[in-house]
Length: 332
Ligand code: SF4
Ligand code: MG
Image (cartoon, rainbow, N blue to C red):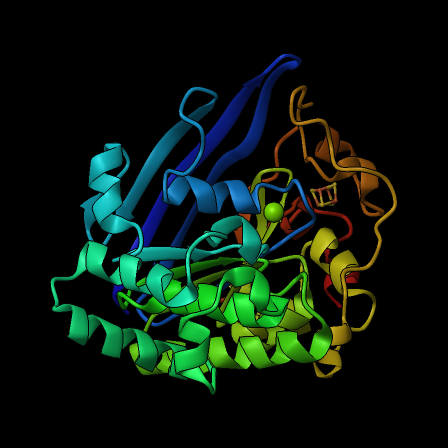
């Protein structure tokens, strides 16, 4: 499979009054053409920061980014803002949780789509309007002419998010990054929007990075899943690997004792006792050690290595070491 996005040892830190926050601590992953990659984890685990650093949407005065980001074989790590402008929207676009923070409240819906399109593609006004109306139709809006002339506040949250998806896809980007795209919506609307995203993705062969704290969402959408904890990827694998053969104690805790893909949208992350570590003052060893019921002496001393548990299945946990006293019991 062709690699569309390659992230290599990405580190993101922020300078704050309290010290340097290490929000993303050296992560590497790829996204293939047409693939949907889910990124899951509790809030503050670094999943949104990862997304924002791909598009260079973090405040450059406070965020420090290291590592390599390659898009379509092109090293975009040090792209300037004007170089990124050509990528954003046209090649990689993003949908956020709250549509009202991205939609312009003073501009009619149709014009917002129109603007995005015109910015990246040369076409006559008549052609552009046709494309906009078609996009409104394909995001499931019935009365397209009416909606074209409405302002964002005149639409429901679900409709606004449909518009956001339309804006994100109108230039046929190769990669869509969706950060909690349905979190603020009710369950029925969520399901409709996710199936809409899936349809459009299949039609346009778009790759998707889907960021969520909701396992039900990725179960139905993703091909592969990354589980993040305290700025690192602790486990990655196919949907089957993660749901049916989870290896990292954090993933297992997230899923609960019995993973249930059939629970779909109602399966929320379980509450895990304790708190994630302080990202300003990281201790050596495994970041999950304080909350882990399998913790061993080595876990407080050394950062776990990454172990391969299958073709595409990787886990960063000392339990998988061949000398781990608990491995057989744990894996059975
Ligand atoms: Fe638990 Fe140790 Fe594995 Fe960390 S490395 S998850 S503390 S067993
Ligand atoms: Mg977030």
